[in-house]
Length: 212
Image (tube, rainbow, N blue to C red; front, side):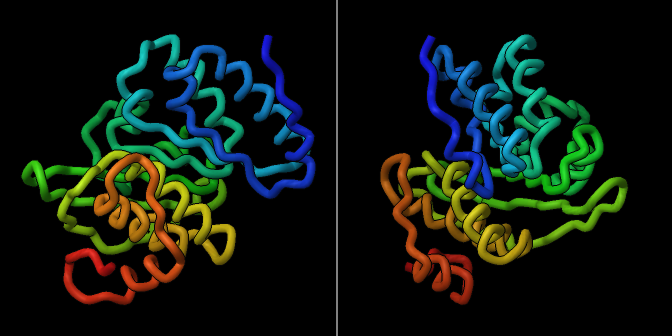
């Protein structure tokens, strides 16, 4: 069995787990469990990300994955994945509040990625923060973007959100995540090379077109 040395988590602030990888790559679930266990023992925060692979996964897979949510400080999920856990038709904020309540997670983000035409899409996210039953929703603008390639948008949101959150707060994380996801649509391929200047331009630009 393949093993990794997770001792780096002893000095880390946050562990990010893209749980869609657990269905894409055989054997990764046991590695994620080992990393999660070490993070909990090291007082390292855990962020989990759920996407369309989770939404389309088997019941056994969904049950296995949800155990990670119980130990997460942050859940980042698409609307489709959120509705796999909360099958009622609800808006983003209500979904985020429900997941926060069900898993006891302090920060939950739900993103919605809708194609109006094959080359134009709408991107929106809702974040709910708080402890216990106290919820505080955070709002940001909805982006309408011309699509070059939509692959990697969810990962770009996660990267932008975590950068903004770790350097500032959850509200900045939401703004940075949305801006980075919007920029990702202008880049071919799965990797978005967004700089801090790109994000700042997107946040301060006028209109709905990408500022780049």
